[in-house]
Length: 416
Ligand SMILES: C[S@@+](CC[C@H](N)C(=O)[O-])C[C@H]1O[C@@H](n2cnc3c(N)ncnc32)[C@H](O)[C@@H]1O
Image: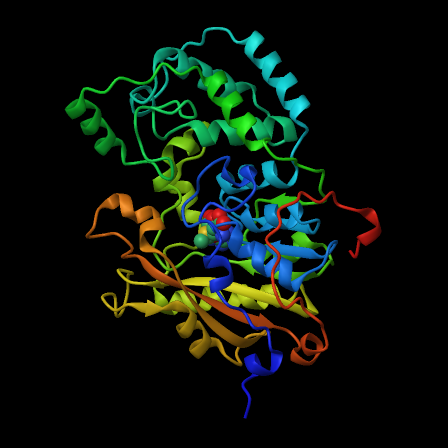
């Protein structure tokens, strides 16, 4: 007998995205790095094959907004939500991007309004990273940017977050040399500075922001109908307000692999958020049994916002080094979710794909050979839907197109 996956005949082949360049994608995707983010080519493949212009694409764990941003670039309505405020700023910048002109005007006003700031109350862990003038500029921008109310200020904040730490030899970073993806612990950084007698670079914060802005707008960015939210996945129905998604493409946290608060303390300082408060909110610390409860609740919430003929893809990793019972075992989360939750959730789990990728592309490569790729050796993609019969009736594109154009959102294709 044919499996449901075979009878749906989706014919998904990871090779299709593996053969594309590693950095394939619009430059707006790279305004700020983010741990465990999708390469844009992956959501692109699924959006291109399984949706049409005007369709709604949802990612309720959107991180830096790769799925909703790619959806918007492709003329779909990209909706992204994530509980992490950094993710919210980055996603909003990508799906509600202002014009380059309005950004340059605001930057010019900010630059001419800049006055020296009193930095005496800044924590030592921040002052050790930047020269005096950069500290003053960051403090000034922190006070001036009304990123919650203004999309222009939000975009500038996203550029600031992107430039706060990284390779100090490049004109796109303001700090002493550091990884750009995550912040090393304050103690580690203090010792590193002392051992290597490091001095912060002399890059002007406004120059760094303008450099990053120019790069993001190197290719056209059209107006979109995208939306960004800072909500818990359990509140996804309130985000959708009665609308339903044609496609959900998402990746939840993988057990206890990443602490987004602790590992982003520098960017969180800019947003005035305590890292431990954020870590207390996110679902990134569960051991396996609780994780299954979390995934059950998540899938049932997603069922409420997916169209009957829509598809849902959930990317999870193969993980080891997690907490709780069987902590030394490696867990294939996709298999575990399928075995535990099949027939117990309101979406049908119709398939599972293994997506093996190059370990050298992973962020953990910078932790050295021993730890490289230890947390996640490969991803698994769960395929879910609400009504198999309704999906079967739909015609999907057989192959993805890799042509990159920024399609303006057209009112005539509105299907909401
Ligand atoms: C694997 S990352 C997703 C990365 C994303 N695919 C990208 O391209 O950047 C998982 C995300 O889940 C978020 N998260 C954790 N718990 C959450 C919750 N309860 N509700 C919503 N988002 C949550 C984290 O902040 C993190 O951004």
